[in-house]
Image (tube, rainbow, N blue to C red; front, top):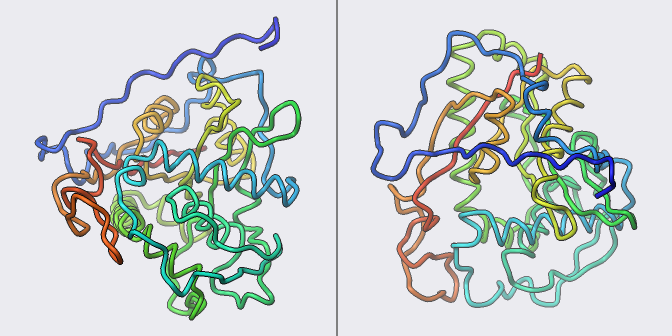
Length: 324
């Protein structure tokens, strides 16, 4: 850290409900009006040592480096990804297969959650899983809203992904059929994706019913869905909040009205609440068994030792932040 750089303060502790606090599960108490983001109040938590870089300005190598880093970080720190047990071996349809996209031709690699999350990012965020592989293009809608922090040598040391929150579309294109890479990613991540998508749908419905401005902004495409943020080796923990506060500042300048996010990690919740985000809906991890129960990994099923998606006595909180 340079001599003139001031070390950011640590975020305040953010307490989530536990499994037994059932009265605090589900819908949260919503205010009559959503107040604008409090950028001035998060200044003490921000870093002036690092600046964010939009993902669309990164090289292909940096984009894949960012995807790898986010995958590794989520596999280590995300409460569900680090608890779920993959099947004992990758699906046989995947063995020896190659994936072709603008980043090159690659095999799947190791059968780990870090690698599954990497391929989720590459297949669902960096490119479009509905397009045929020979003509797959970069997903600019995500790249233009996603950001990284670069180290001194140009390596990515932190990254975050966002997308426009779109309304349901009956004409949406289905995912590619007979794609073993897509099938493997969905197999491994389905318990996580189901929980978060269910929470997202409930949260957006609640917000639309309670706030006409949110409903109108959704129709106008002025809401951002922020759903992945991670620091890598080389980025101090105290500087990580700059990723979140920096991107929200960018979204505000670009004219977006709201950000919604599912926070499964309480650090993320602390950052959201510090800038004025409002709790909307809480989904506990350990009140409903969502996967097959097994003390050891099984041949074809995703499992956990007790059938719950995490061993953390907490859950995922869905938030909304008004930008302006």
